[in-house]
Image (cartoon, rainbow, N blue to C red; front, side):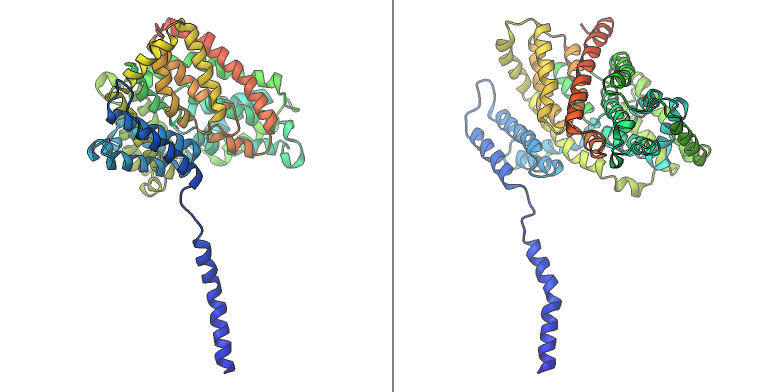
Length: 495
């Protein structure tokens, strides 16, 4: 009896963890209910309404699904990839689109350019080439604190054309090097010495990350989406067009940021000889360029050449990226198993493709034409320069309400571009102006883009300091792009 009782007791005890685990697993793990209910309720109400005059029922329903998807991306009841997949399901199940139409999302060259760019960017990290580049520039310019900051400016500028995720570039490559260097200099928030060097340098690195994102079609995940949306205004923006438009104001912007912040938010230490010594020591340990690094440099030089000149020979940017990717796989610079594990690329595919698909069909069904006609009556009394200035400022500073640059692009870029064109703004000026502002606005808050939480989380800058510094620099950024960019774009014939 005692043995039986002991055994029974032992069994009960042994099952206890399993019971606890079952109870824990019964907790709701699906979508957040309140934001989901809000989105579904509002969407259902509009779904039952008659479409506005000038729109077909199909177009109206697709617009509702599209806008509901955008709101859901902002409220985040589920990860963005899951939200986009549900959006495709709704398009098909409601017969708003056919299955074949919905699945064209995954055949877009723009989508695969972004996915391939993620894989190509892995090469910089896996081979150590990105880290080597950062230490190289620090070893050249790192004697003074201001020079050190310009070393990271050059690092970002060199990496931006090839690394399409500002988070991968800023948080994955630049931040670890910068954070290690400032701690080597004795600047650490744990010791209350953040203002010695770290607060200034990491602020510069973050701000520059978003400026370089604005300079290249492949500098930010959302930029190819912009290029696609710009086509609705009959504006063609390829890699070369974007780079040419942004290079002059972008370089001026990059040159001013460290100096302006040095004056407005000065570091306590103005010399950083130790950083230069550390960088040289790191480079010494890295040794000469490895064979994989040489393959990376040669391959990316070829890809960049094709991005710039390939259009003359019928080679599209996605084809150029595919060629480079195949070369890196063949020579073992990239490993296919690592590519499978690159969740950022596959996650981007799952959310980017559906959004691009819905935006494309809305344009095809006449939504943007209808919207432009409606806006002509609203802005008809204002000159296009005044309309452009108002829309640009609203589009820029409304990012205080967004936690994602891409979400803001998806929600507002196409609509505001239609407003500007309807007001008489030269299409290329409107398209490139909003394109640049899309990235630059990511600097405003400590949550406005994927890189921000990483830099803010290091603890060098308080929320108050972050918002104050960002607002100060936002005025400088806008001035540079309005004045220098305006003159440069006038020279290019954009207006």
